[in-house]
Length: 96
Image 1 (spheres, one colour):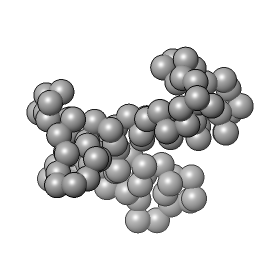
Image 2: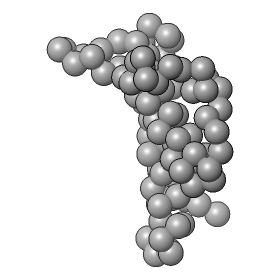
Image 3: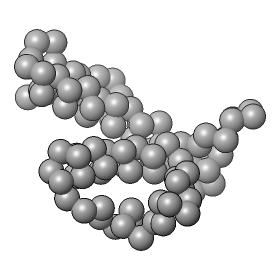
């Protein structure tokens, strides 16, 4: 059983093999972003702070793309899945 912190995030393992450590920290980071985005409507997820163009919604989209790309394409050699399969990456490499 994984211990949860005060925000419901799973505590990464203190002593584990490389795979379990990586997955433990990945789950912690996923849970952190979910916590920060919880309760926000679409406008809240699109909001930026100061001069930055970064938003929580944009960060969610970016992380979904990166995870899908690394695990599905690089690790398992699968084709891009929706919605990434319909993007014209050559025409718009900075699509996200």
